[in-house]
Amino acid sequence: MHSPLRRLLPFICLSISVAASGISTCKGTNTSSMPTVLHNGRVFVAADGDAPQHFASAIVLDPGTGKITHVGNETDPAIVKAKAAPGAVVHDVQGRVVLPGFVDGHMHLCQTGAGLQKLNIRPSKNLGEIQAAIRAWAAEHPDLPRILCQGWFHPSTDGNELATQLDGLDVPGQNRPVYIDAEDMHSSWLNTAALEELGVADMQDPPGGHIRRGPDGKPTGVMEETAALGIVWPFLANKQTAEEKQQHVQAALDAYIAAGYTGVIDMAMGEEDWASLQQYRKEHGELPIWVAAHWLILPQPSSEDTLRQVDRAIELQSQYNRTSSPRFRITGIKIVADGVVDACTAAMQEPYSHNNQSVKPMWTREALEPVLRRADAAGLQIAIHAIGDATIKLAIDGLEAVGNPAGRHRIEHLETTAPEDVPRLGALGITASVQAVHLDPAGMTAWEKLLGKARCGHVFPYAAFAEHGAALALGTDSPTAPYAPLANLYVATTRKSALERNNTAQTTPQFALSLAAAVAAATRGSARSCFAEDRAGQLQPGREADLVLVDMEWDAEKLLDAKVAETWIRGKKIHPVA
Image 1 (cartoon, one colour):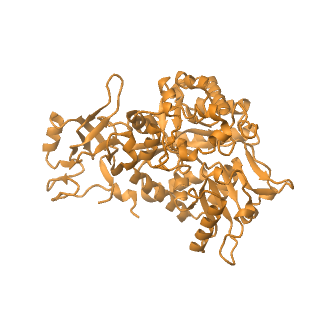
Image 2 (image 1 turned 30 degrees about the vertical axis):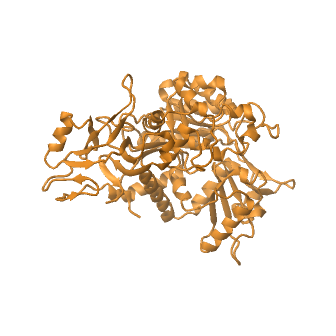
Image 3 (image 1 turned 120 degrees about the horizontal axis):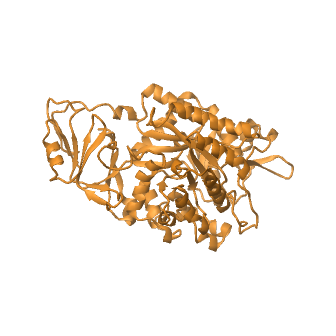
């Protein structure tokens, strides 16, 4: 595995022409100051004010400053001059589309890296297939201390999960703990050995969480919401070695760079992950991609304990902010206010259709507002996870009470927003932070049963948010969903499945985005959502030269065949490694 740091080392002086890549340089020049010209391409320039979207054919980069100096056409004097400059590097893009580097508007960096090392059971369609996959993995990895899995799709087990179903799957003579992350990362399914080593039998339900128990009061195997986030996650993090944590960071960075990302917004930062990223920076220098993080705030038994988490975010932001550390910073807080539809933990205004039961948001208005006000007063951005329409209304009401549209506060997911609440986001300056991969029809097989047909007719209303003036930030929520940006764009624009290409179903196609709007939301929109649009997310002079070269046709229906060919960060190509 190549370290992304090595990719950022300055180019050495070359005296040859590299025909395969179309890059040519001149002998005896200082490559750190020579202009780089990417030409013969389709350089996407998003609509900006009265200027419509368009494609240029060339872009000039300054590797010394890492900035873009010109975007235009081959005959522009600035392009002609840059090509003729002594030592200029001229790169034939060979007709590829040049896009701003993707910015994942909502993801989890360290968990993504850890997930790449786990067994993915998402393809398993039922309990038998899950058990078979775990049995095979256990046999292939007899030396691992625990069997860690991800991708449990709730409909595959229909709410009937038990710890005993995961017992007896190990190799003869072993009985290792088994931990399975739900695909949405809001629940964990444990076997008996895992429950025992965690000591769950002696635990109470944490605020905002639930430990499933049988009639006898004993845990049955599933930890929901903050029981997973606040108990299972920290326990497993403490069992990882420092070396393993660094491997997870490296794996995530390599995967994201190869996929075309040049920046990310981490949406559940805590002490363990922060320490891992700081250690990476200590060992390698600056991270190769920029990271803006939201500090995770979990409900605590007392308001003082809850607000103490906000104070920690304020403390960190005073050291790591847009001015002092623009490429690695704390930008805000993250509040998880409900769960997910598939687990029936998203708070809806009307009961779930299949069982006529309701759940409440994880926060009351009275508990939420002091947190919002403390964060806003300190200049922190507020991000609220809200999936159920009752929780979305609570989040909008809370941000409306804060009354700071300039703060660029945001609501994450917004999957079942009530029609009357859609216009409120734009009016209040709330960013709609959305993840199209979650509306993939292959992952929504249980929704009509759970919510009914009428409510399913108004889910994921992205285009409606935009029509009413809300800024969109497009992300993936990795590792809860695939991080590939082109597949994310495909689902956002076609409302069809990227997971099952033969699946012809569409999720509320009336809310589809145009390809240009989706690209803008996945680049400029995500950068803007964390006040980074002055340097990232657009191919304009003065912005950082973060970009991707994509083999693609400008056709939403063909996005699944598109490929990221090259990733450039601050004027240097770092993927693929030469």
